[in-house]
Image (spheres, rainbow, N blue to C red):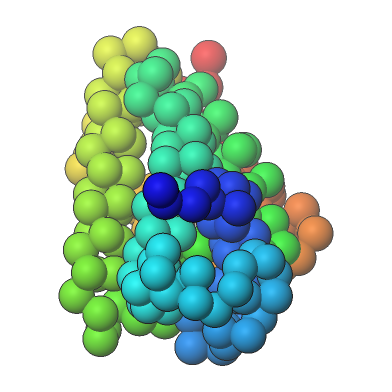
Amino acid sequence: MPRKAQYNVEAVLNQAIDVFLEHGYHGTIMDEIIARTEFNRRGFYLEFGSKQNFLYIVLDHYQQYYLKKIMLHLESQQGLPSISAFFEEYVRHVRGKGCLLINCITELGFDDLKIREIGRHYIDSLQIDFIGCLEKAQALHQLHPQTNIESAALQLTSYVQGFAVNAILAGDTDELQLATRALLGPLSVKI
């Protein structure tokens, strides 16, 4: 009869997020993963196969339990308030540590096709959600009627990536909140 797992996979994946955020993929060593997740080495390889496969599983978990929750603001498609709510929560999430997915794209995107595919899917989803929100904003007269929606969505998507990187450097300052207001302010129709 097989033995029941002595660990909580979700807890292991959450702990691994912190390790990869602190050290990046190449800087993370197996000894630290094993120590921080309280896994034994044999069990780790039986469960996940390799460090690289483990990273893919961690990224999937990260997207499902963290990024997807933040993207729900955009999926509600309430126009500019949805975009503003997205950035508020995203800035809180990345503050002082960055975004695991963007960090992995930056570190591994040239060499790892799977990371590139994961990143492309995320960026495309973001841009599509921004387009939907901007179209709704235009319909609700929250947005200047001459705004090029596709261009604005691309700009917002690029800011998400930049915010993720800048969050590491900005630490606990208000830089990202100020940048968000500066980004969204010109889009709004002043009544």
